[in-house]
Length: 212
Image 1 (cartoon, rainbow, N blue to C red):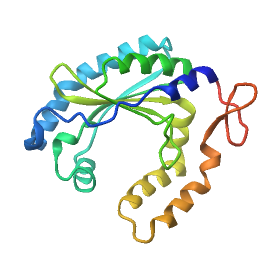
Image 2 (image 1 turned 60 degrees about the vertical axis):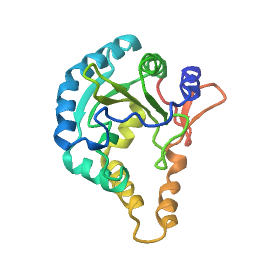
Image 3 (image 1 turned 90 degrees about the vertical axis):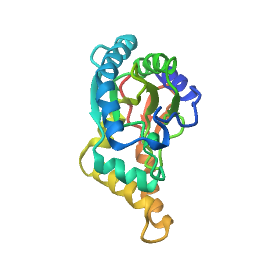
Image 4 (image 1 turned 180 degrees about the vertical axis):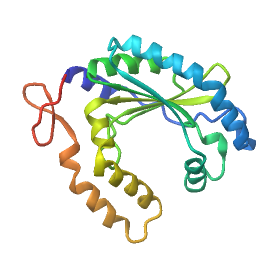
């Protein structure tokens, strides 16, 4: 419902960074050892989040970040500090309803070290989701992502997702003035940003009503 979506948007961020326990001396071997030791625990936790959401059809998946992407982030964002890589092991859960998203978010918040509410504060590409980090039983910090189905499908589908990935890379190391790229991104902003109409329904800016 629109009310549930509004309550999700009102959830407060947990800012800061919860690094891996090995600290700045962490090696890539330690990062992947911690990841492999945590992934089973993380999956079981994801199953419990789906159960708490009440939406049995929610799609749960897991992933391990590739080394090439880790090195990219080390050189562009983390200053070579591997302990700041907290999304090497991650799960993603996609919900059809805002109510299920809200219930799942409240469960994860009880355990989360950090929380980015990108429903309230979407990305420059106008993407909305919820991102948490939390430690597993072996101490390794992992990422939990919660999504709404329509937004996730728009991100992953066809040319839109390819443009998303290109823009993410280009904005980190632009070849021309930043405004050149941001002007292109914001040209499609109204088509993606979610709104609530007078009837309390969640819609796109073009007026298309999304499913409850």
